[in-house]
Image 1 (tube, rainbow, N blue to C red):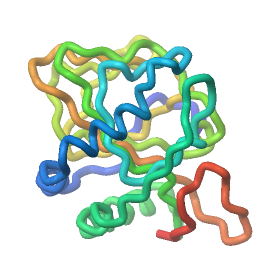
Image 2 (spheres, helix red, strand yellow):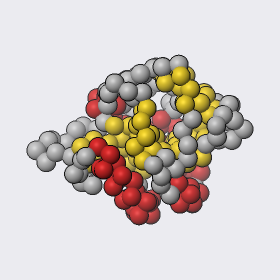
Image 3 (spheres, helix red, strand yellow):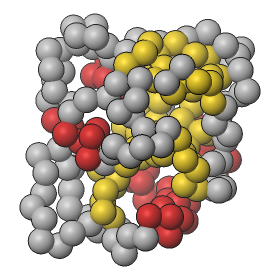
Image 4 (cartoon, one colour):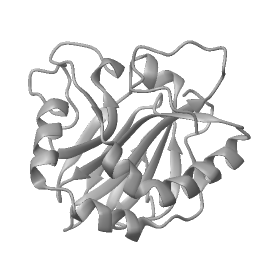
Length: 205
């Protein structure tokens, strides 16, 4: 969602260790399946080839262009395990924006391998320009550089940051660990608003 800033802290703290414990229980096969969809080398201008992905709530119609395939996932089992932590995250987000209710459009995890990069890009597509994008680092290190408009930022584990994805940005993992982020795309819930083509479900939070 466009706003005039670069980055802002939306969540002061969350149980990222609890999130990590749940992540560890998910088989590598699930990561491999979702990564194959997200990182298709047929995609024009793909920026994700150094990453792995795990989708909990995702619909590929949120992104369009050459190389994208139809893919929808709503992992209600894992989302249910995350619910106590997610409830606290949602509460903090509501308080920050002053929203009474909201939609969680996407809930995904991305792992950027040590030494890996996500090259400079600007996010495109209706979902990415109309939703708030919140990054919650689960595993990170000061040598992981989130670069917005050519300025380096360190995103600390357990905090939640809204990124202005309409500004040119890149990520460089200069550490010796694999970085893991939880990414949540969300928007305010309006009862009279029709569902968008990129939404997996119509659950109100």
